[in-house]
Image (cartoon, rainbow, N blue to C red):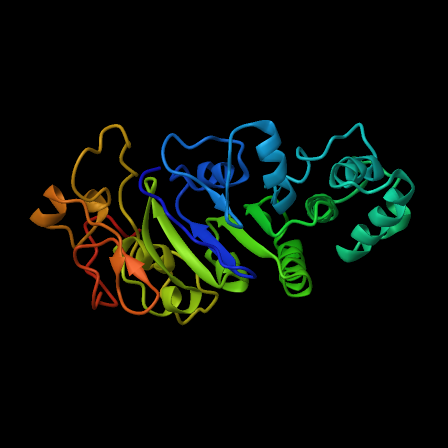
Length: 303
């Protein structure tokens, strides 16, 4: 990552989207303190995230993570009560109150408290993800970092988990950092969106603005690639050609220029910086305004 800066407001759901390998999960791990950034800093509720364990423990009370794979993120040798107990005791809940608190947590995420003594393998994927959310809530955090929270689940279950997250956001006043490549998830859950390409933020705006009028060609290409369940819509749209260049090989200019139909000599020699593009939105593009609806495809872009 390079020159990445994001701000998440209280009670806001902030989504970070981009292709696999662009740096989304690395940023998430920097936020929770599991990776130390080589430069810059992370500030949570006015406190800078340190590197010592005692400093990180203070951060972990305010920031928790919901992992992508609900199966591997839960210890198969421990009961659900035991899994929740670790977080509850870390928060300072007395031993005599552990079961009552765990019961409340399971009810909050829509699970039967009678299943506290069961083990993870006795639950479905969606139920395991609910347990993972309950474990995160056990610390009473202010911010939940959700790394692809529904990508490992069946489509029929995804909406249930997303609705649960939205309900918890309203009920508890939570803030979310949602890491995803699924724009349907973004539209359903996020208030604001940042689009990342090769370790840099290339556009940031409200969800409505991103979907209504993208200012960066990469953002528009991502939106165009979303399939539309309508037989009247053509089966293909403009797609992004080529592969993401290697970060070690890219040295100057715009990193997206080799895949962009609008690239010119300026894009070749000068890196576009993130700049304001109207009220409360920004983009890093030399030609951001008035993007045409249908840019001419390059050879081979359509089947």
